[in-house]
Image 1 (tube, rainbow, N blue to C red):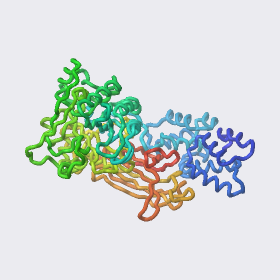
Image 2 (cartoon, one colour):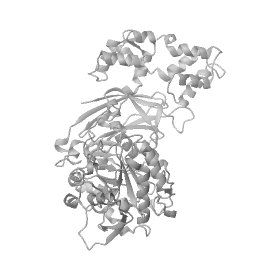
Image 3 (cartoon, helix red, strand yellow):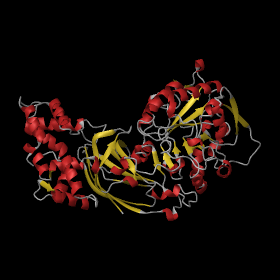
Image 4 (cartoon, rainbow, N blue to C red):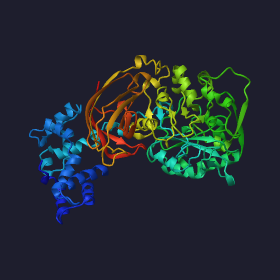
Length: 638
């Protein structure tokens, strides 16, 4: 390709008018050309260039060589030349062939091709002839259109008119924490960052504070405290910035009735019209929950409630307030919202926590009755998300209303999923069920959310502040459906009469044969051990899903190459229930045979995979995008 025709090279000639440029000048030029680069890799290539001649400046020809080293990838060139007529130009007809044959875009037509050329071809005369140069092809292959994640799934595409219990809902545990749950700081950033990530269920642990001002912190620990009022102000500001769909505030309420009234006042005065405080259309006799669509831009309060919706409505009409009533919780061993927090007398004794390890309620002894005082002003704000102690599946089917939700600790939920999967799924088709981490996770580690999604649990609450594979699964799951925080459950987890269980998928299996040819990596982060820009990268591809679908496969190690490692290895997976499966690409530096260092990862739902030649963006440990790092693969399934 004649680079002199390329507009940016015409522009940069001015930068070389006054002679050669140094590293800073090189950085400025690449930024001007909107080229993503990793600083380590650029410094290394720049150093190799100036080592050829003494000094620390480069000529225009040197700059061209650096540009090509960063941008002109041989794997793209091979594809381009396979369809180009003369090795320089790709006519529109050939580009159409490439889209149909290689990218499986059977619906592509002349209009599609023209749009691509107009969007990505930088050379005017080539664009006017409806052709594409190699420069344009590189830009297209690096674009989001060629990402492994389906572009249709980047916006809300699912039916949002089903009842709330038909969706997986992005949920956070101890949202106020930004470190561990024993001594870590509580911070408003916990709420801001969760909301910006599209989280739709936040947890607020409320305790009595000084001067009648409720506070938020992890009770009976050394975590710092923040005012409840400030938390609600932050929520009001960021509630619908990333998603218009309903936001649930899960209150873990340890306040006296007097301070509960202050909480109710804060919620009403700060949230205003955003706060849902009465049923839609005044409907109190509900057979099913409203939909996310019907509850757009509304904040729902999840807390215990006194009496019925009807009684709340009557009280509100009379502007009745200033009173509290007792709600009794029979002491059936179970994991309710409050069970995870240390009780007012300090840590629970081991015997009191055994409920966490039982699969179903033991024979009823004479139970102690715990009484909790709930201020009516706060109780009346609870509409579709009433916290209801989980007793057992039979009890729920007999007595629970559709607007009553259960919270179950991970240990008990895991046992229930193992021994009573079909009853668990029957339960989650009817009632919103929240799972939360066990109290012994002092460092705020996370459990594997997949096992609870497999039985249809809607609110699988994780510690958003703790990075790792399980948080990556959560982020990947909710990339889907436009990142709005609501993902419609598969039909077999919404059907009241379903026969599906994760260990016996039966007729619900729609097997998929998935083949991934891992071709190359580009500008991977260098090893923490490397003094230059090197790493020994290896890629692990993992499938998470029903037990039968769990799989891990690993590529070979490419020695001392983080800039442009080439694998050309194919991995095949047979997936029985693709609707529940997630796929994770994890790039590691093989420090030794037993020790591997994380370099980057990308996780997405299997149903969101694009076929054909695709770039896989890489994210850092904390989930931020590594701007220049990616993998390149060919994806195919039937």
